[in-house]
Amino acid sequence: MKEGTQLNPNSLSPGTDRTLAILEVLADFPMGASVADLTRELGISQNSAFRITNTLHDRGYLHRRESDKKYLLSNKLFDLSRPRINDKSLTVCAYEAMQEFSGKTGETCQLLVRSGNKCVVLEQISGKHPVKVMGEVGLRVPMYSCAPGKAILAWLPGHELEAWHDEVKLKKFTTSTLSTKKALHDDLEETRERGYSIDRSEGLEGIRCVGAPIFNSYQYPVAALTMMSPVFRMPESDFPKYGKECAHAASKIQHRLLS
View 1 (cartoon, rainbow, N blue to C red):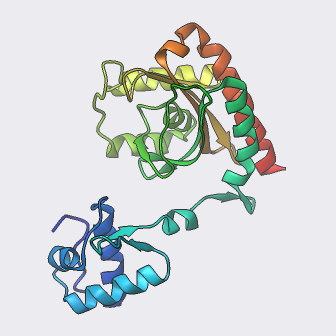
View 2 (cartoon, rainbow, N blue to C red; view 1 turned 120 degrees about the horizontal axis):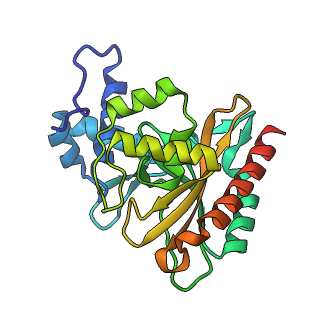
């Protein structure tokens, strides 16, 4: 049994504890898990696992694959947690500016927010080029190796940034990854000075990005906008042009959120 999916023997609500544990286990089974798998992982009865998974399926939290009857997480929890600011949906407020930004550059545009110590993709507008960079809505990525993550980190309060460092081990994904605290902090300082972040193939080889923060009314970075491109379409000389366009699009989203 994986750490973090164990049942709590002292839980005041054992049924709730089992339900949440099943959701956590399924998060570790992207290809799906059967009732027998859940029974084995959690040490609960097959009858209990069957009743809970059927209830979660009926309420839309799980999908059941007909070919093998395995359960998979749906997007319902993700949809419920989509952020709202001033009672406005972040994704709704961002969509028009994202379409305009992507249409102007021809590249894929994404909206991301912080999720724990990583970033998660909330929305995406696909680029128009035959060769394009794409991700998936719901994808979680390290903050320090992508432009939107660094855009958020750059404007976090100092104590939050230090707390993030205490919990995250920096490691190299490519030869360009900023894998030391000093290198990352120098980059974040440059990001604040220029108003946008840059990803020089730090998360994936051959992909470059720019990113810009979106603030709430307290000037806290609640999200970030990014544009993704293959290296051959984004030379370093174009970073200022695309970075400023990204910051401009992010400011449009922020204005709509706060107005």
